[in-house]
Length: 506
Image 1 (cartoon, rainbow, N blue to C red):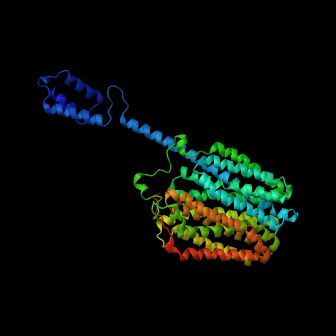
Image 2 (cartoon, rainbow, N blue to C red):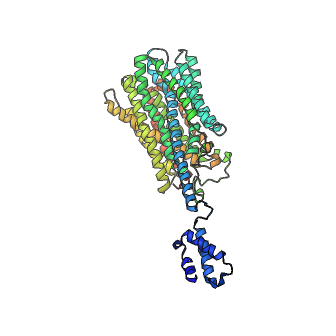
């Protein structure tokens, strides 16, 4: 019996569970031991039992092993991650298509302007007033939309704005009264302000901040996809069915998409019992999404930040340039270079195509450079400056090198250069404002620079139409060229004012 005890009291991985319990029962049935097992053997047997319990060996009552539980937990986590990824794809897809419809509506009247001018239904002065009405309302509502997105459902805000925008576009197509046009386009601009704040809110809820710049840029590119397709679609419909049919299509698409986004978008992963995709490990928390600015910063200190006003000034310039070339570029090509409407629309489409690639490239480059390259100033802002240099070259080429005999391929090439060089900084300035200040003020910081951008859009309306009437469209392009070059000089000469966020951990 002594040898049997020694044999069964060996290492745990050599003893079967049934043998273990047989040994235990034999020992317990003979409490006096009658000299069959010495104390060393008893101790070895009890240690063997303890080791097996720690390793999750099964008890006689049939409990699940610990490693089985771990496997089950891992399966549950993997399943939730797959579900989360499916929701992320659905949410991003709905935002991408929905925001593309926002842009189609915003520009639908711009595509009809050449026809409205040719038919005598509208004048250049009226176009400037209508454009400024929309951009003024957009500037106000985008600021208010940022505040509302923190106080109501971003899903509802996004869908309501899209529906209102579509409805105003439909009504615009049913009248020829210039006063009603101005009022309806003011309403359209006000509805447009709900789009991007809701997008930004949903992006922050559904995607990891380590890749925020890339996701932001890809979503921004939805406007470029719309801007690439919609001018050609609008030109075809206008030529064959009239200007009002083009606006009807834009309005109906937005109304349908508003219904789809209302049932597809989800405000927060927690609402569908999914893990938080923005959560990072504890040791990452201290080094992620923080800037050198103190967390105790107040709104007053934010408002007096020279860096905030630097970003705002640069954003104003690039947005003014982008809006001017989008709204007036076709007019310039048709009136001064003798291009057809389809050729002018191709230029606008090429500009949006370039913007698609430029916006995405800007997000990827700045995510990499700002984390890995040690620059004297803010990494993202220095990348924006390089894009603005290219924009200066593009505006100069449009003003001096293009002639009525220039190949359409060259004209489209200039359009692609301009699009890439403008939409890149547009993506970057919003990201810089959001990440360079404390979390409790990041939304306010973005709202301030977005407001400055929309002031630029307002300037691109009636004020630039006045410049065109006074000094021609060449004078408008010269003014834009000077402003863009000045913004580059401003960024490069004020690096000591730049706020440099700490590198993110991917």
